[in-house]
Image 1: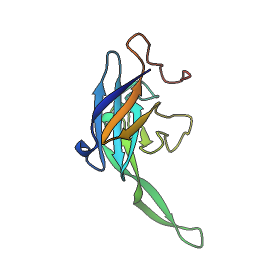
Image 2: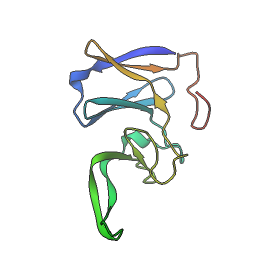
Image 3: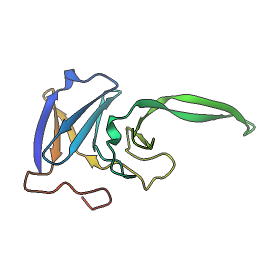
Image 4: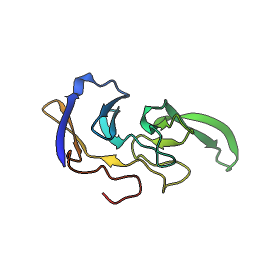
Length: 135
């Protein structure tokens, strides 16, 4: 593995994202509420560029005290990214699909040090593991 500085923390909008291309794969780094999250830009469904889709608030059902539905509303705290190929959604904080916890984006280590955002990615000689393979 190698550490790669991808830019200054001040370059990121909040919420925001940056897609970084490497030899054979891409990594998306998101900033949300001052925290950073990074994933391989590959949808577990059919390999699409999941992290390049729209960022939208999660749709949640509002449940009354008597356990009846009061309708749907956009979350004020949960943000998803939607794969542009087939509409699979993933929670930006966890990388997990809301309807199927086994469908998830592959996490990439991300850190901020001295104002620089750094990710850990496979070395040029290493192959980026595909979705479903062990890290």
